[in-house]
Image (tube, rainbow, N blue to C red):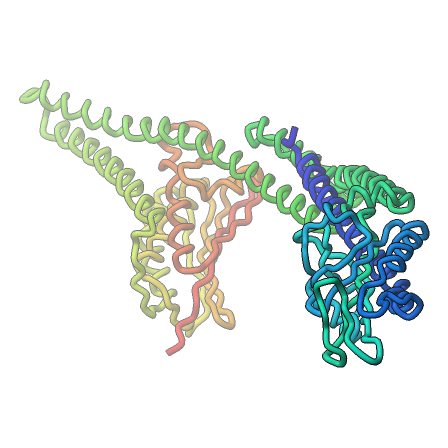
Length: 510
């Protein structure tokens, strides 16, 4: 029932409205009760005083029982909700309008009466209710003075000397038993009942409006949740289908929209990473097959020639034996080179290669590396030349690793440049760097292969003939080395016109 956010919000709103309704009802009843008490006491503030002034409650030295009984009857007819008590100076009840058997107190506290007479407190002022041991009610009170010329007897057994203080108090309890509880007050007040009904209907309308509002506010969260669920069920492969504007973007208006934009960007990145992992896995599978073939070929050739030498021992001439051994040596060197490249790339990927940065002349290094490939270039009828201006500044890099980058790029250019072509190594100084470009006039690289040529074991050609070269590790190694130097290798290629690889190294400044 409470699985959705809107349902939970509606439940919370219902609880808050119920709590608010109960609190409002209690406050309404309490404030109404206090207001009634205040109004009742204000209207009857001088009631006891007028009674004392108009009625002779004492005759001679005794309580005027006849006048007191007539007063009780008259007031009960006029207002049956009041109760009259005659108190002695200590607050003891001497006579009352209520049946004596209903009294629970024999005396009344004089402190509220004194506050009432002194007007030291704003109404309502509550005094003891003789009918209850703990309840308090509003009242009116007045002092019963002594008659001039002698003692006043308030009862047959109590005689008070004249001029010794008040003869007693007239204590009038207002309200009687009519509003002794909130339920009775609610039952007796039409306006209060109507107010509570209006409050209940208002809270119900607020609840319904809140449910509709929460449903409207959370609709985008519901849509986003559904989009997340669809994306999850698609195994993170499907693009996120989320409502867009005409411009093709999510409108950003509040936190929910920002959450939607963030999720869409995150989902797109996850989808690209999943695709990348799938491509990497495909390349890994192809790598295993390619490396297995590349390793198997020299191993098979090496094993075959060695077995031939063992089987035909003493039957081959010295020249034949030498030829077999030279072929086996070349296959062994090829195998060692492949294994060395795999180990070197693993070290670069694990960032286990430490840079030994030093200043050196890049032009001299390029000349030395180009000289090593001159013989191979001549054998393939390819022109290999170096172009650079005089007085080039020193660069700051690891000379051994940069030499490896140059060797890999030149070897790659020789592999894909046909006879009669040329390879040019050019150096161009800049403000803070020296740019090195290796340009060839080879076959070029298709545009769809350019983003992948620096990936491990990626080869533009898909055939595995031996003359095609290595296992596709040279460019990956070169890129990892330049990444360690904080440099970027760029490539530009045109089919049947050639390819240019270039990178920059920082100038050494003492």
